[in-house]
Image 1 (cartoon, rainbow, N blue to C red):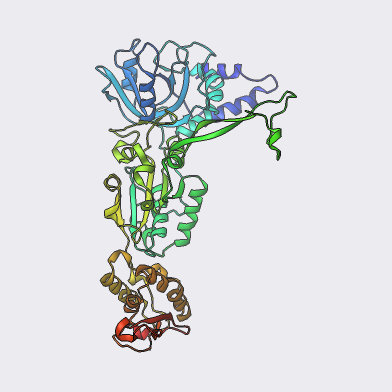
Image 2 (image 1 turned 135 degrees about the vertical axis):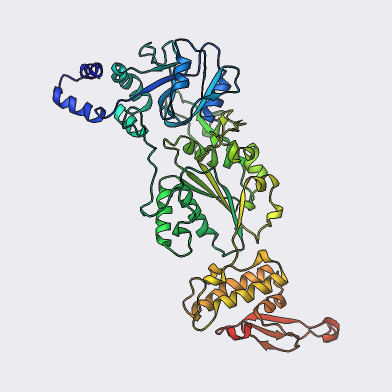
Length: 544
């Protein structure tokens, strides 16, 4: 440590006193004996560029066991938790922390590999030229420790310019408090203190919540997103309907603001270019002789031929941008992408070749990790393990049976059906019984996927509230379900009968129509009715 102190004091500015400078340095370093190793993936023809990018995407560190000067043995002996910085040749790429012991690699005989997590990606990846010491990217070594006396130079020539941080920040980021006991990464925590965590991070979640409208898919999506981001146990009271709902919403908003939850909506025209990547035009203005640039004016005669041009550049889509953010997370904290109305999009067109990468065991860092080469940018891309996907689908739009088969194989499907038991009586009206009767009749006349959800009635505090829901939401929805076949709508509402005259039911009014002259009377044309919704309050007793 004396050598480190001497080296650090040698960097003291002349305007700063020894005591002041010493306090600044040793406050950060006195309790830390930071060890960090250089690891090189490059040189001597051992790695192709494609291999390097593939290992980078998979977070796999490799080295041959016979590497000279005992470097192979050192690589094998290091325990999980050791820090290192990775170079591709002379170019720094990232600072990582080993998360596994060594194991044989399928690269070939004698090759060893181990997984790692990224603490910090390089802000720049140009060549390092400050020195050629063995610990530096330019040094003639593969796996070499930065010595104690070299830590100040390592900080000034590599850590600060390439990663934008100092040794104290690196130690805090890695959780290093002693030489041999790196702490677990610090994860974002919810404000409540009684929420339980999983003992370890689960595999990536691919989940689709499906059901009729009004069955709580939006609430359940927010719940699942918060649970995944904060690594909460499923038995946490947040999972009970109506309990701490405001707290759930606040936490969800915090995670959205932090960029850890992203929400998009699929539709019929949604494309691969919007979701993964595409090309977008970039205009080019030719310089004018006076040094300005050509501009478009209202007079076409003022525009010279070829004054404005454009070229196409790759443009990242929502999923690719979000996946890159998740992959570069310095603490591997969970990220959640919510895809609303996932069944309304053309899945094969939107996901393209990425559909295979969604499988949990094909994610980066997993045993069967896969990457693909994207068509527009040519970049190597994989889906990180800390990116979870939650989709929602309304079964009135499309049945699960009609979903893309590849999507169904890769997602867990969780059905959300109406919950009449969550409804309390209102002004003597049994809402649970009301909803049950409506849905039993809908299922008989149509199918179970077009039932009405309990969420329509949760906000009803009086009969007037209930009347508004029935008039403006439920009855129009029934008319849409049955394609304006009001006889079936009346049957669901209990207003149907076999009579031939006018009738006022609990919800609908039926008036018989007289045939125009010359049509041939009732016998020729059959009975015709005009249906309308009652203007006054509804009579729920007639629904029985």
